[in-house]
Image 1 (cartoon, one colour):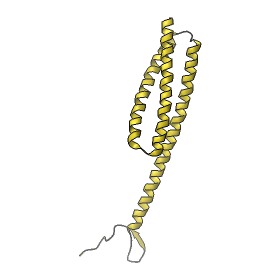
Image 2 (cartoon, one colour):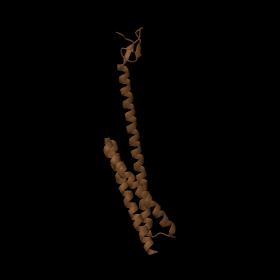
Image 3 (cartoon, one colour):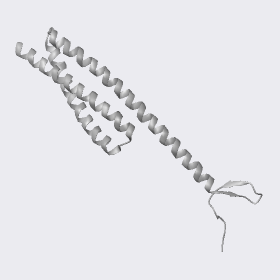
Image 4 (cartoon, helix red, strand yellow):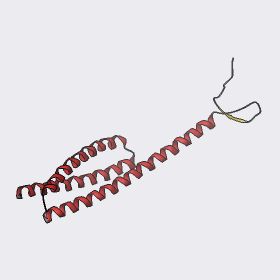
Length: 143
């Protein structure tokens, strides 16, 4: 039984380490979103996906170990509390990153709309009555 408890403690320690690594990755992700470094961001997202898979697998094994124990040691309880605190921090950082991405998308949409307005003004022509009319330049002209 003591051997299983030590395995659980080791697993919980590994989980805390992985959650700490995830927090660092999320911080880097925000910096890359802000700097618009798409190539580095894609590499980081691959690393993040791999880490999340590891966390999920470890979490499943920890859950099985906890279910088989009637009570947890104080050390295990402390590790679990630390992991939960790190999880809450990671959730918050994920929300911040999501907002940063949304703001970036809004800026890009606004820029695209401005460019389309400029393009529309450039192609502005006049009809027979002298009223402005959008369209392609020189349409209807034949030689």
